Length: 214
Image (cartoon, rainbow, N blue to C red; front, top):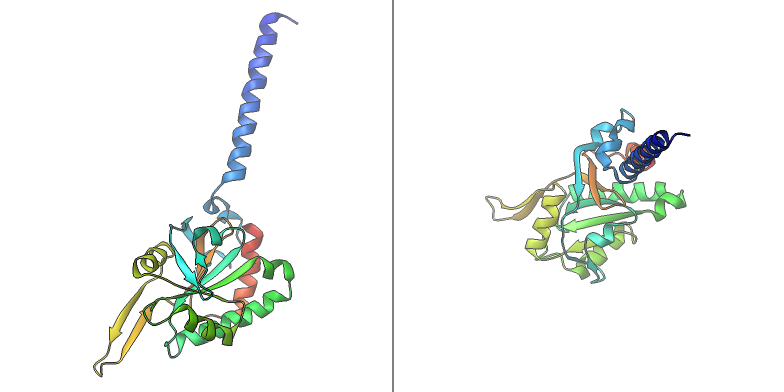
């Protein structure tokens, strides 16, 4: 074969190889947003249009173990913000999450790859010890998180959660907070949320759809 044609074929082969490499890199590193087109129509309202990595934070579990972004990697996380003196929304949501956990427990692969996190928005009153006793009533597998106000604010902001203290006309103190259950994927990205009202059967169905598209 003519040397000029050999050079041309070598150049073409190089271009093709680079193109294949770039495509493979994109396929291996695409963000969750790149995969939302594969989601079933029922699931799309749960997914956020701009998923993002969880910002740095440092909190303590009910066992006084340090918990940060590294502990979000490797499995799915369902995160709910609340407080122990909450009279209604928090216990109702925790009962729903316990029901969902029981449903997923029947499938050991899913259960082993999922953690349930309760983040206290009232860390001055919700010590790790109090969290341990409270969450144990609902599900001993739940992880409670509490921490310094600045760390709580950083985590809440990153997960799109809001909270604020409130004192009524009688002087009774309470906390207002978001009611959604935030979804964090095994890569540590915030990808969506289950809005209230929460139904464990619907959540289970959507969660199973979600983990199939990652």
